[in-house]
Length: 140
Image (cartoon, rainbow, N blue to C red; front, top):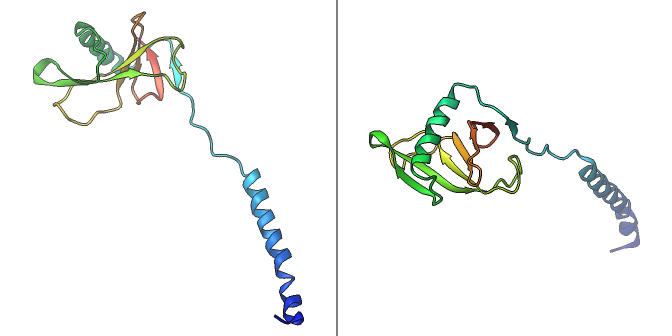
């Protein structure tokens, strides 16, 4: 490469360096995406579906609140599902408890699960209802 062509190529690297620096600064100062909102936790449950959650709690209680995930026979030839342990990873519910999750609405065995759950504290029996797959909790 001749000296003339090298000097002609030289102005390109400062421009590239400036572009790289601008991209790095932009990446550092771009606002982060919003973290998922924490669940709202309510001390009571008065919405219409709370009655269904209470009925489901009664049904699961009669079965001894099984701790093994799977399908369980329900009334009218339907089944209901328990997902087993609920780990409270996001810390929405009181800490230091062992929780298990149960579906609210029975259906045909193997049918898709919906978003309605109850979560039971095994040591106290306190039950929480989530109508939207753990986005909110209502104490029953």
